[in-house]
Length: 379
Image (cartoon, rainbow, N blue to C red):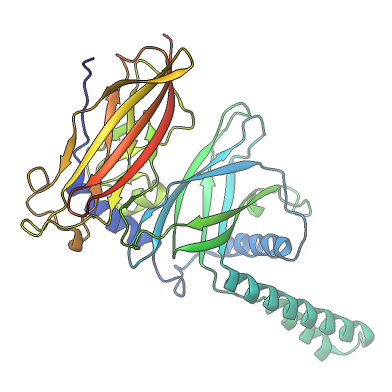
């Protein structure tokens, strides 16, 4: 069966994009950018909520949402993780939200717990002393200093931002994009979305908020084994007219070079769709003659028929080598090897499919296989 297949030409452009995005999210957190007083107040309110959860208090549940992430290789041995937060439909959303992300490693957790316990003990002592001698102004001042001396722990990653929703409808799904940079390992991530304090008409009314705690297992892409980034499966790919600015990249980390992608949140596609599988290949060998990778990719499709799986069709083998890569392609210089492919579904009969992606490194003889299941809907 004949079909049209086309790969996205991204190799050269992707290098600049990934380096720029990784740099933006890999900045030294010891020197945070200056923020205004209103944002500092929001941050203090967010710290209070998350610190409370760390101490065992119940998390706020006014807003419900989930997270979808796509880890990929970053700079300096770290992992770059673009992600999307999806707010559940059917809930009333405000015109604006304050967003706070705190990522806590086991070491962070121990330091935070100790710092919070010491702070609570100091405040309790100062408060008790001041109440026992209410006329003593020095004790009252000591209580104020104790309360103001909030503990600050340097976490694995933190991010804050204001989000404008406009006039969201309760039956719509709102999604926001963000990213983080982390060393490989296991973490707890606390994602908080809350009403801005400034938007509250009654300042005595607690701001509505929602907190999601998820455990992150951050992969290590520097082990030397043939591997890939997390696959992004989508039917939404857009070509940008110009390279994005750093501000655009920060707002949309799913821009790669001059290509923007939006991960699909379903495995069901129409025959009129073009299915794109977007990923990067890491730790390939280097051909001793050319100094470049020599990788073969095969995309094979299988469908279900009468309760059994059978072969449907496949793409021509894609070769990523000195013959097809740009002359200046150099892994050591930060170039990344894309395995991206776009497949029009117009010739696929309605039904369930499995796409097998086979990556063969001809230099090291190593193989990596991914499977993607999807459904093509009837017209």
